[in-house]
Picture 1 (cartoon, helix red, strand yellow):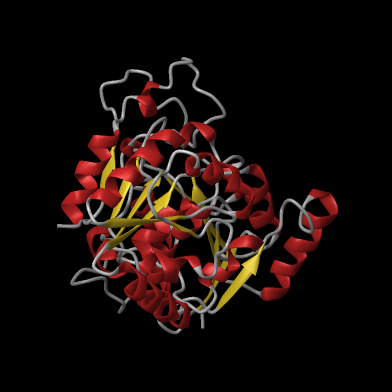
Picture 2 (cartoon, rainbow, N blue to C red):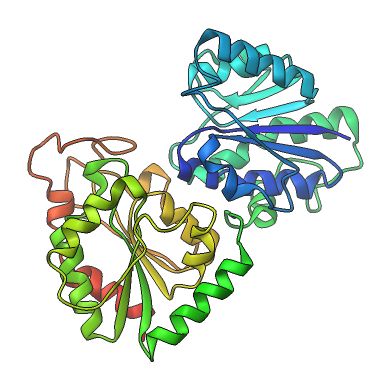
Length: 360
């Protein structure tokens, strides 16, 4: 049995976008043992998925941080006796940890810091979606198996690496769905909606420049209600101030889930929605993982960076004619140009129009 470690203790969205890679590994190597390493706060999103045997926490900000923590962690990995590690993470710490783990086959991107410590590297094509870029990390694994270990294994009809085949067997990102929570919330919405559609609103993001202005979200929610749509506000406990600011300008009924749901519950709740309207953030990828249509508002980031919703049922709203976009990969604290046109120039009616196309 081959033991795989998929190592991506990154942001929430990055970890979710890694699941198609893991599914592809499981389909190609059904008897393998697969562990997925993520940040501790995200473990609940992946525990219980049937294509992952173990979820490992890498708490780089606390227990696994610093020299002592790093030493203890790579010793822990050595004792696990993994055969192959695939690391989409580009940081120098990830490269060092994977190298010191003494795992025989270590695969990462050429763009990773200290990439010479990997046994195999793959070019990260910035023109492709992040899911596809992650899938390309499987190329060395497949080539090694075909030429050295088991030449009878085929991908599709050819004994070679076929990205189109991998994309087909990998499918969309996935997160764990708590079916008890899903049924409970779905029943709740059916009782209170009384013919209204239910739309989730995620107005927050780690990065301030990724947030569409609060007043615009409030105006949108007012207009949605006039179109027989009830809004459900989502936010983490430490983001409730954003929801409180939005609430000042709302003059219609809405449902406030801000700070009242756990990350484990969130996928099941989002699954009950008719639509999610969101900034470029982790919940956007959770919605994709639950097959919930999404209207995503992109400001400082662009679709071309490769982190847009990986499905065929979602929409991205962005101002494509701004030369200053993208100003950064993940977002920033403030607009470098001080005008914030990438968000301010996206109108409420533009978002409303796209939302209504899903709810007719």
